[in-house]
Length: 385
Image (tube, rainbow, N blue to C red; front, side, top):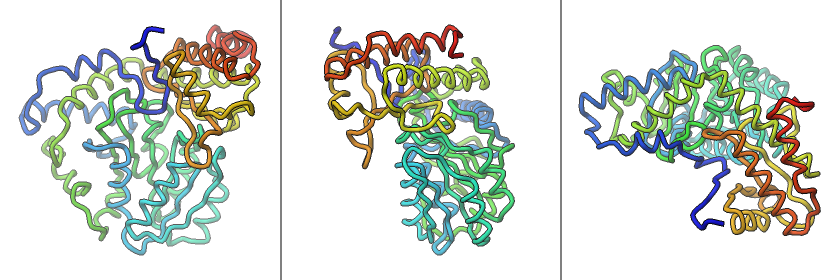
């Protein structure tokens, strides 16, 4: 193996396209200059197209978690009733943030590997009409589960509560029609399907959410969205923006919009189907069932002969391939293969072929080529299409 040849197949940070790297290498300019204001205006318009919204969309210099905190800090006042819906690690993170800002949190854990049950949510809202905020995760990377945000949005819209969605890893991989689905706040991050390094986060805010924000009493400074709203009126960001990252964002959004959102979503769906078919072809078990499987990342249960982290070490050492491991209770029990952002058919082929060879080295008997063949059948539109 060439020592520097690496294949990054984790759900963030993801691979960065050369076109984006090139854009980020341009000479830096002042973040308060007229030239940069023009760029912010242009990029914001493109972001709205990807968010599928006419709402305000803000750029924040932070990780995705920073934007999650911004969302919570601006809509959860001490004593507010909050319904937090979880399918894994990041649903739990949303819960924790709401507690920190004084929310009275009703936490519903649907289990790692399972999606949100809308019937349970409806019952909660009917019995607790004073719920102010509902928190949900679109794409739970810790478990490879994708939630029904369309159904959830149309349900929550019937009540006083606002819906806040963590789309950090789902935006630009999985369809999310912010306005049509009545999602009041959508949060995303740069280092996932948007194909950038870590460092930028994004948040869209509906008119219904602005009413809640204006009444909010939680302390905040850096993440104050009312300040951000004043700044964006002049195409400024509130504080110092990572200028080079915005250059890269501009190029990444161009790539997404040139491909077309429908084509982007179809590509991710195809890669997910191929990966899942390949895993099943190797006799391994998937964590998430087909009806809620993520289009951005696939979680696989490690075979009994080896823990997942040992298998991942072999993959990296011998083949330069990096998979993500399990988190918390799933540590050592699952590995996760990302197929989001700057990913195509050959990324899946590399991932599966390396997995087949690594499985043999750790004592799991799998026919070489069995998984790759299943993936190829999806890609060529064969019997599995």
